[in-house]
Image (cartoon, rainbow, N blue to C red; front, top):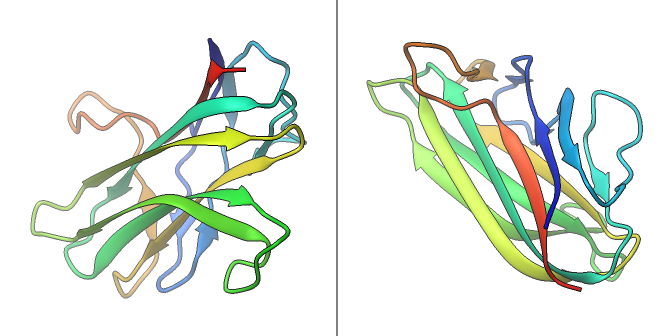
Length: 153
């Protein structure tokens, strides 16, 4: 069962050498009535315990230097900085090239408790701010998304 999919429909700027929490503008599905807070949405709160598959993708627009990274995170009150009470459960990394747009994907299968929160974060070292890439007829890059699906209750 698809629990929820969030989609970015507005490009988000990621400043150089700064961890940035992804914000999403559209909830496509929410079949299990998860909690999002107010738009733009930066995290989702799970309300049903179970095993989930969590996937995320993002494209970074332009830039030919540095690298790009993304992190799927789960709140965990038993850990300490650098992310406070957030634990990275999956990540992806790629170096920039002459081609510009870089697509990253990551996923995790994990057991979640009711009340757990999931978020996606970005990082880049272009030297200047860059934006997330949005889908258009020429770049073939899908809008950034965060998807959570229940596998086993």
